[in-house]
Image (tube, rainbow, N blue to C red):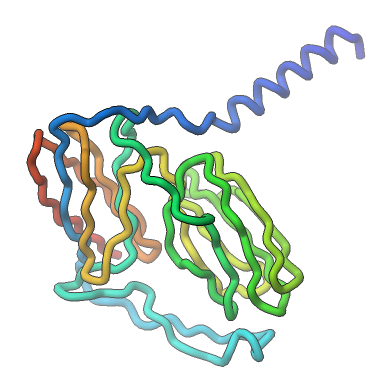
Length: 245
């Protein structure tokens, strides 16, 4: 192979890398004047699903015995707890909130803590093992009805921590390859307009520049629903988002 061909292939590889990893920080923080508020509730429509049966098959001294867990937690008036709500394609708006502490996903008694969280694109995530058994924390990014590995981290010893930078926006499904019942979900957000619903399914997004947006509500049991929402200056727009299986 000639030198020119080798150089061309190297440049092509660099271009592929550049395309594959979009730069973080494309969102621009500006002073928001006459911003509005989106206040709402995420509710579940239909018959609540049966409980999920978890039967640990290994490391029972740490993981515990068989148990049943809800697939979706509903509060008052069928409000959905721990749904992720966010605005799509917002390129300018309020500054990101100051990060409090280290962003962590922890393996604790063969469960992930927290189960649901939101982190900014480009953030550094600490993956921790607080158990005296091997965990293999595997994160998959949802992409066109498929999943692609974002991180795949073996944690053989208690107290071990490994960091990974989350450069791609979207929903990450987190599993443990050693304990198949372990599940968690992370939104890697492109802008600071997001919330995790409270126990009664409510959420609030503040300082939103006036305009029309697409609001997304996601829960792992139902998937995502998108609804249009229009924000007017200095006013509160109220939204109810219905999730169904």
